[in-house]
Image 1: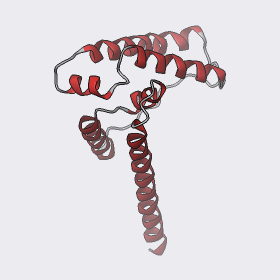
Image 2: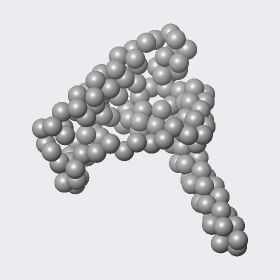
Image 3: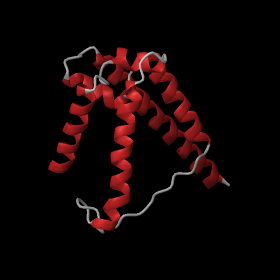
Image 4: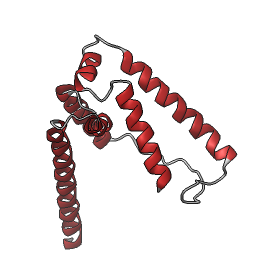
Length: 144
């Protein structure tokens, strides 16, 4: 677990240092006025890509869990498309990405708590809605 904390601290520091924890910077990117976010995202993607390529070859097993490395494929379905669209609209309206929102707390932006509350509430409501649908489907199937 300490490794996860260190990784989170590095991630948060990087977001804050690059000014990506500030909603106005993200909004400038979304309005095509500042492309600095592209370089930050590319840097993160490059490090992740190299790690995903090298870790299975060099380590053989996951360092924290000891599990073997394997790909988990998520099918591209209607839920992924709709969820991504809703996330994108929320991000565009607020200029707040979840990772940057947490980092923004670290630079003293306490008004970001409103956005974080909205994110948690939205996630909770979606989970509640999905559970109700699954319960309804199981009840309908059991009644047949």
